[in-house]
Amino acid sequence: MTEGPDQHPVNGLDDVVHQRVRLGILTVAHEARRVEFGFLRTALGLTAGNLSQHLAVLEKAGLVDVEKGYEGRRARTWLSLTPAGDRALRKEVTQLKRLIHLIEQGGAAPEAQE
Image (cartoon, rainbow, N blue to C red; front, top):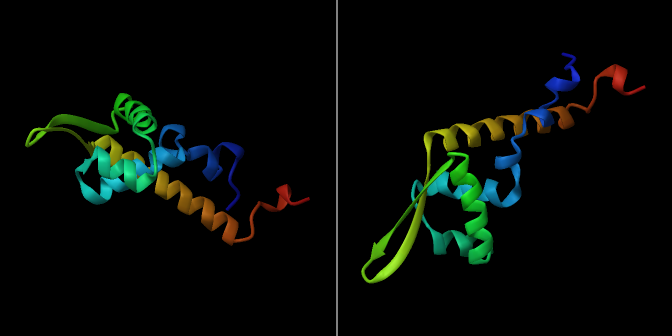
C-alpha cells in the first residue's frame, strides 16, 4: 500500500500528546486512573514547576482533569484522564504502531527509495 505524504504515520502524531513528558503523564494517568501530583513528579523525574506547566497544557486541551483537595491536613493535587485524553492517548499509540510497522517493513514506498 502506498501512502500519500499526508497519510504518513508521523503526520498523525499529536504535538500536545507526543511531547515526552506529556505522553508520560497520560500513560501514568491511564494506568492509575487517578494519580497524585507528587507521585507523578517523582515517577517522571520532574520539578514541580515543570510538571505544573505540562499539566496546564493537558488540562487546557481537555485531556486531564485536575482536582485539588486535602488528605488530612495536607494539600494534594490529583489528576485523572478524561475520556478525550484516553482517546488521544489511544490514537497516539496507534500512530506510533503504524510508524514502527513502516520502519520494520523496510521503510518507504518504491518511488521514495530512488
